[in-house]
Length: 434
Image (cartoon, rainbow, N blue to C red; front, side):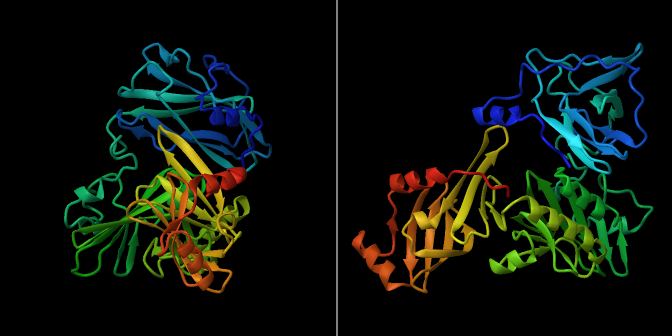
């Protein structure tokens, strides 16, 4: 759907720089421009935002028969008594030199906001202005009273703040909603607001941050409320049941052909291979009509990257990926405002005994536990410190490895030389898309 026709952005990222400060600045948008082809449109995700929210998703849809090219640049305008007025670009603000190609029938999601402009967000009427395929596109929006705020960017109040009987009153269509959307409500013989499910799946497919709330209320039992929040390539699953809140993180949405699940396996088979502890995205037998959508997402995912199993730490900062290479794993780290890092490791560079990784698990202390098959037909458990890159064998079921551990100091806790291991794996540094 998108092609990068300028590679400068990658160089900037590797060098630790921000945007290309020398890139051309967008000129003040003119009201008169080339006629916009029918079917080429641009709109913001929502029409009204609270002024506290300063960054927004916008969508460009190419409903024409030709591809269109464009870059990152845009401007914001505010409506005044004298008409539309450009906001003032900050000094030294600029754009990363990235170019996109959007094919016929495709839609792309991008981000705009106030961070590049001197003016602060205030209640009023605004519009986004952008050059796309030689035409100037406009998308109007407002700042004012809205459920989309800095604290509630997806229009939902936090799960922890909901009233005890949340969801029950929403079964009555005349009752006011508690917040922006009540969510998808499943009750005996009915499913309300089901259109939110395909909308959520579509946003996930475009890598747009979003949230889906489902409420299950049957009979006289207290409603069970589940939030699924998609951000930075990970799904945060939170469930409130009988007043208790539990949460877990997942990497993908998958299907078994009947139901929809959150999973750490890139598809159903990969999840089965690594003993995935998946959860339902919607209640059993309630998601069949969206199976084809999820299957399409799976096909695109498997075609575009090599990850087959991807597990996030509880805080969503660390990620480990397994591929079809049985002894290889990649570890990555990313934190908003601080950067990102990633490396590829191969257990064959350790002691040559491990033939396949059969399980991975983040520990409470942030260490990564690896369960492996060994060349001797046994199994081993290894502890990996993602921050230092050190690897430690905890236990082994093979005489060969046990004797090796004893030579290294006895017992079942012998750490590899950090320098030796790093010297080997540094030769194989690469990034995996997870």
